[in-house]
Amino acid sequence: MVREHKLLTEMFEKRKTLSYKYDFALELVEYNEDRLHFLINYSVIRQNGNFLEIDDQFLQFFEQVLEVNEEINVGSINNNIQQVKENILYYLKENNENRRYEYLRKVKNALRKIGNVTLRNVVDLKRNINNTFKNEPNYSVKKAKLENHDRKRSDINILIEQTYKLISEEEQTFFKTAQDEELNRIITYLKLQLNECRHNLIEIQKQIIEFLNQIKYQSGVIEKIRQLKYLRDQFTIRAATDIDAILQQQDVLVFETNPTYPLKLSLDHLQSDADAFNSIDKVSKKIRSAAKVKLPLAGTINSQYLEPAEIEEFQINLEEVRNSFLASGNNLFDFIQGYHFDKHLSFEEKVTVYCQMISLYGSYFNLTEQYHQQMEVEYAMVYPQ
Amino acid sequence: MIEVPKQTAAIFEILSKGQFISSNSSDEAIRKYYSVIEDGENFDLLFNYFNAINFQLERGDEFYYFSRKETKIDLERKIEQALKWIDIIDFFKTFDNSFGSGFRFTPSEVLVRLNVDAELKSKLEGLKRYSGGKDKFLDIIEKILEDLRKDRFVELENEISNQFKVLASFKYLEQLIMTINISAEIKDEIPE
Image (cartoon, rainbow over all chains, first blue to last red; front, side, top):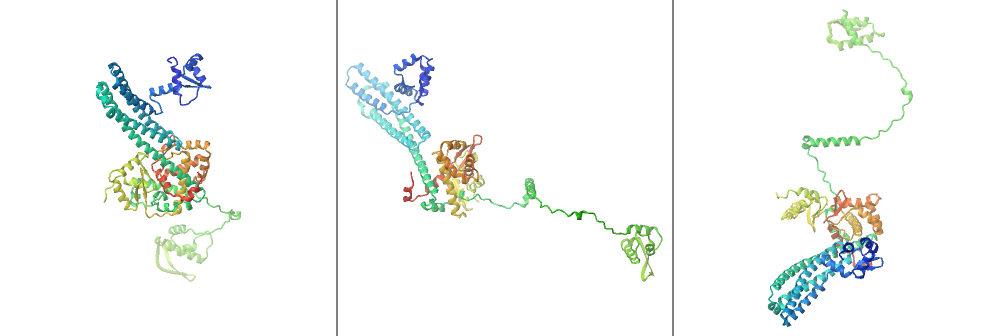
């Protein structure tokens, strides 16, 4: 066994997968088939076709020693209780001191075992319940498993009560007469252990109830949603259920579309805050870019319109006339009559220029009170100042 | 003038959008708000405070939310919303029976399951109507999750692994589902 510990360790670790191939095992025993056959002959390993597994007895032994077993065995506690009872009976009937001591030793052994086994069972039970609740994917299996665990819990509870009764009520004669220091210690310790188990069991019971309730609730929800979904797909949900009435009562905000609260901005804030200015800047940029619309194209312009056409217009440079007049010594009217314009001007036009000159540049001229007359036009004598 | 906790404005901000405050949020601020509401007499205080402006602070199983008596919303819209939730919850419960408060998942996990679960796939195709014209499965899932996230029924717990967590407020949806009664004779007609 020691020699094959590598193989057995490996097989034990893979015990859950159930399919440990013969060939793998062969590798671990350095391809020495005799060594495998030795184990098989002694029933440490069982061969099943092409697969190997550790014998159940050994597997249980390993699991119990390593405290990893998943099965909760209430029977062993029961056996131990029976054993205690039997040995007490023998003890009381036996007269030989040596043999009495032998029975006492057995009682002590069994009592010690009861404590350890019970505590172990409680711990296993708790772990199994948690595992079942968290890892079992199938709802009905999960429920059945939890109910089974609950039954085991009550079994353990009964056994604890029996043990308690045994050591504190039923066999008073034995415990009084035995008068063994170690026995008393074991019993005290056993009581402590049993008490701890009781408290744990109460907690476990609470947990199972909670888990079962959760499962019930969850499967209730699943069942309901399945039914509702069916009706919804049949388009009969509103007729077949009271959904209208239920929703009529629901005034939860989540049904409403997300509200916005359009509050007006504070003008003071907008004018004074730098951040606000940045925001305005951003917004204005956004608006500008949004306004980039495609301008409609105008039709083509007729080429005739584009041909150059000249129009001449004659203008008198009054400024120049004034400067010349200021340089001369003549009166304005005669000056204009004699001025050489670029174009020939009629008498009336010259009179107009005379008037324009006075009205524009009156302040440069010396307007006198003397009047002359020419061609029925009476005009004032104007000299440069 | 009533003295209210200093988080009141932030709480109002969330609840008034129709969102929920759940105890198992991974956002520390939300958890803080939850414990503030829960703490001592704060619930009554806030209840009265919000009641004065016509919002009713409601206490759920590990979550808080607002309701409003004179709601302006019509029944048709509520029904529409409820039917959408039925579709979505049905989909996720098909994905995993234990989909509920505290459940963690990633959209890609859902995607992987689609390949081996034809029922799930057909249900997701039914959800396409809520995806806003998106066709890809992942897009549809993400759109639905986005909707659930907006109302704070789920939250994105880990941005790197894209892991979502279902919040306590999801119980509100479950409870709503459970309160709907199916008339007895029709219940018998529904196939198992």
